[in-house]
Every structure is written in C-alpha cells, then in structure tokens.
Length: 114
Length: 115
Image (tube, rainbow over all chains, first blue to last red; front, side, top):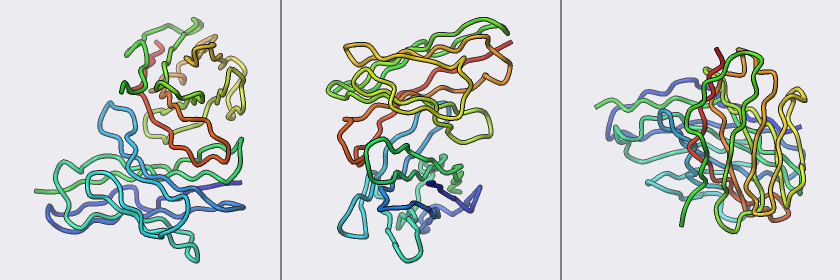
C-alpha cells in the first residue's frame, strides 16, 4: 500500500531565507510524486510533480523538489522564502498503473516571518 | 481555460438530511475525484469516476455515493447526514490517461456544515 509522511506539522522560516518542506513516501512500484499548496478556504493548487527523468523538478512560484530514490524522499525547496508562501503544503504519491489512488500526506503548515 | 468548478460554495444541512454537491471538470478531462477534508485532518479519498464509471472508492460508508454524467461533470450525494460529515469537500479532475501520471487539478471546494 502507498503511504506518505510529512514529518513536520509546522515549518517556520524568515523571509528571504531558504525553505525546505519534507516528504517521504512508500510505494510498491515506481512512484509518481506531487506537491500541492492550499491557501486558507481554498482548494489545492498544483506546484510540481516527478514522473521520471531528472531528479530535480522545477515548478510554479520558484519552488523545486528533489527526488531521492534511495531515501524515498521528495523534499520541497525554495531558495528565498516570501511571506506570501505561507500556506499549507501537501505531498502526494501515486503508484504506477491505472486504478491507483492518490495518497496525500497530512500536510505541513509553512509560516514565513517578515 | 476555466478551472474545476464546484457548487454550492457553502451548504448547511441538519442531521438526517441529504446533501448534493456538484463538480464540473476542466474541459477535456474525463476523470473526477472527490475528497473530504475535515478540520484538522488531511485529504481523505472518497470516490473516483472515469468515463462515467466508478473506478475506485475510499473507506467511507455507502451513504456516500455519486455519479458522473455524460459531459463528465459529477455529483456527490451524502445521505443521512451526520455531524461528523461537516467538512470541506474537494473535487479534482484529470485527463484520465493510463499509468496514473496525470495531474489532478482541484476546485475551490464546497463547505458542508451539518447542524
């Protein structure tokens, strides 16, 4: 069965500093990995995904994520945080093959302090 | 290009009533997914429809049901509402290609409150 862990409920970072939001996963086959962001009272917005190829994936709003197969991780990063990045971030995994569900992590709340 | 739309934005019901939530996917998308996001909890998968058929179902009781129409829009029905059904219900759509690599795009959600 697939599973996703986001070990930190909350991440605080100062504006202008680099940020990292951690995600580890477990799947039986090859994973498809996704990051979403949710602002208050809104739906989820897609940031980026890893399907295959280059382990470093670049996405929207300056975010990037690195796929590490040996550590089964897919951490979200940004070189310089903005106050407007403050939101709830979800990592999701989907195993290869039709019929597989998305499994979402519990979410990490990012607070960027001015 | 219009995104995923959901209606109504808010819905207030009392215990025992039925609720109907609606979702229109992005044009060209054939798969529709429903999730429940209760306060303090993550996203819980409810249902997945593709090409008019139910493809998968999460661990929810049968009073949660739905359908997908020929135009790929979808409806989620919750019967015999209970207080713990109060949550944000999110709909997502995707291209529905095989292999599962397509991205899900989410609507703004319907906030269901059960009194």
